[in-house]
Image (cartoon, rainbow, N blue to C red; front, side, top):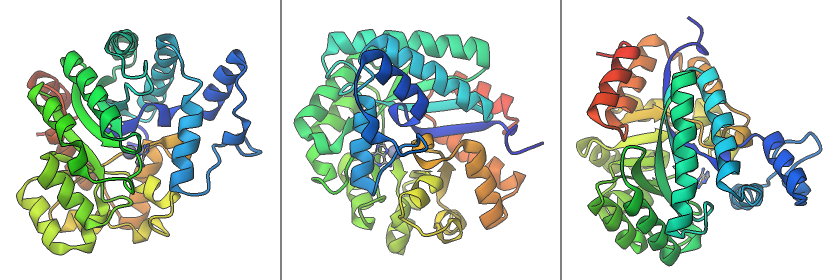
Length: 328
Ligand code: ADE
Ligand code: ZN
């Protein structure tokens, strides 16, 4: 079986970050919005560094203005994921971008997303769940509004709450109210940390916010006592190696710590983060991991087991995916 055909689980995918550049350019043309600065001469997203990446990401997102725009985007994203063998995916969605964190507007966006996801499940055999995500550099007040949207709509589709954005701004503890609000609504929790922040950022997210998964978390490798703590707490890492290499966190795939973290017993998983920005796909992630570390079917099965164990879905869904992937 080819790596492309292998059935996969993805836990860390930003919906807007998965938008193909041509899709965004098409919407921009329809709406007569000039965002040519977001692209290079070949039509790829163009950014200099992480902070500029976030700015380009938000410029691209500015053309997504209605529930229908988001429905079209989700349809395209799920189609692409399914083509790369993904049968279960969790998507980060932000009320900040979907109706400005107004609960009534958010409900309209969510209805469009949920019906698109149901259609994709029936037609393409891919199951999707949503993780409401606040944006760190938008600050704690905006995060509270997002958490309230999440709490109001927690259920079959919205199953998690998280935080993305610029780790250089503030501390995880600044967002405690939002995480408590989401937890009380029954949502499962994850936080981006240990990407641009060092090991302490991971420790803070785990201890102060009580998350069960960390987005990235790879810089935990710089503090082996923390690696042990993550192991004891059974924290799962949503590792996005291609994203880390593309953004210059590591100079090459072979230098990426995913294999060392796995060997030390941590529960690692593999995702693409924002695939067109990083010229990646789930297939490419798998191919590069095979090339860099000699990962084989047994290791990919271990990764799938980790992902399924940490997935923010109900038991019936988990059992169905396990059966489909022949995971025991
Ligand atoms: N938002 C989209 N991609 C992100 C990343 N890699 N880190 C933080 N926030 C993000
Ligand atoms: Zn991310």
